[in-house]
Length: 176
Image (cartoon, rainbow, N blue to C red; front, side, top):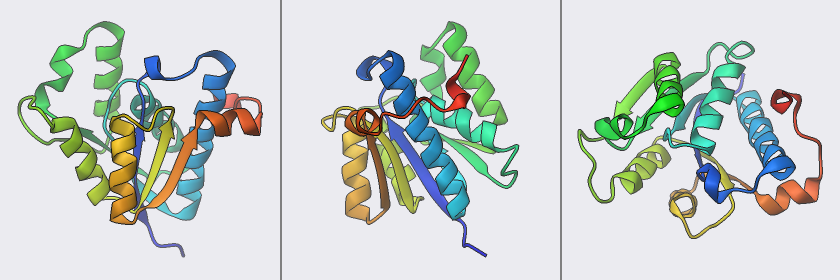
C-alpha cells in the first residue's frame, strides 16, 4: 500500500494564461497531474482558492472524489474577508467549492500585505508535492515554485510550452 501524502496547487489567474485550445491543453495537463498524484497516493490537496488554476484544480479534485472517495480538499484563504471582495457567479463558485471542501482555513481575519505569500508558504509547509501551472515565473506562482524547491518538495511544474510540445487533444473533461 502506498503511503498517503499532501499536494499543494499553484497557478495563475485566467488573464495571465493563454486562451482557446492551448488553455484547454494546459488544463488537461493539470487534470492528468492531479489524477496521477491520486494514483501515487495523494489524499490531501491544498488550494489557495484564487480565480483560475486554484479553482479549476478544486473543481477537478471534487470531480475525482467519485473515483477516489478518500481524497480531501482543503481551501486555504489568505484572509477570511477574501470572499467579500468577489461578486456574481465567481462568488457563488467560490462558496460552492468551500462548502464541498473538507476544510477551509483562513490564515488571518483581514487582508494585509504579504498574506498571499503567507498562504502559499502554509500550503508548501503542509505538502510533499507541488503541482503548478506556470506561464510566467515572475509571479506569485513563481514565488511558490521557488518556496517549494527550497523546501525540497516533489515538483510537477506544468508550462505553456509543455502543453504546446505535447500537442495532445484536451481531456474529455473539458469538452462541452
